[in-house]
Length: 239
Ligand code: BJW
Picture 1: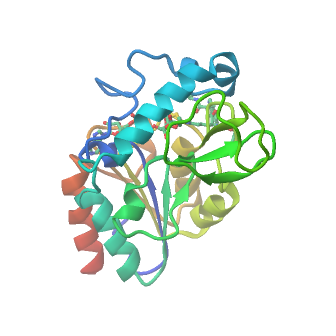
Picture 2: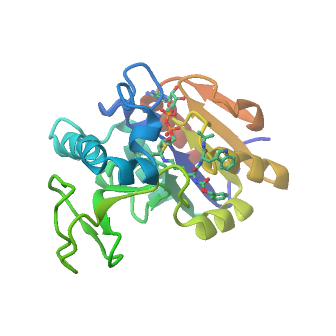
């Protein structure tokens, strides 16, 4: 199937798109969970068992994201350019909890797994921007409860966010792109099968290496996102 000239685009991004910005991926060598098993830090059960450990992990990542050396790369910028110029509409869905898409100029980014710079109170449900360290005893500024604040992030076993909006976009798009994601975590890894089964849209994987769901895509372009994504965006905007 050729690249479409019209119709909407859904782009799914994962940790690989931020790798060239200096943020570690989850499952690669030196990945984020090295030294921590995923169940130790990325489940609600782990948070209930050892909130201090979970807070340390996310405090470290929140600080890293605030480091001036961490900046959006050419792939983030190319996607912002695509959304501005593509007439058929382009929905950017990210599994990433960083804010590099927004900093590259993308608006209305759908954060399927939440955001590192936000916290939620489990007592009063209020969510807010939070740029400092968080500790197990930090009181909620809204309701005053101690120990209720948690990163506004979707952990294993929790429901990913904005699923209705994403599913509707997947059901009508003409092109689906998955960038820098291993295809190991669901429901995101299943988005391509949903689009493929409709039989009306082109699907492309852009990843350093074949992902776990490579065979579900019609096309794959393997290489660093900072190179493959700007090249594809140039192609699409030249159609
Ligand atoms: C480059 C590159 C470069 C490197 N250029 N590329 C079957 C169906 C449905 C669910 C399940 C299922 N089986 C099991 C489940 C449950 C579970 C799950 O998927 N488990 C798997 C381990 C099997 N899923 C859940 O629990 C989810 N909730 C759920 O399913 O609710 C029920 C439900 C049912 C039906 C519909 C809707 C809901 C919740 C998942 C939450 C995931 N949360 C995490 C942690 C967030 C917190 C944090 O950031 O700390 O999200 S897990 C972690 O993995 C993180 C990521 O967003 C996610 C995906 O990782 P990603 O982005 O793919 O990174 P990597 O490291 O894996 O891959 C990077 C890739 O980039 C690699 O391939 C590299 O090669 C490549 N790369 N450099 C291009 N320069």
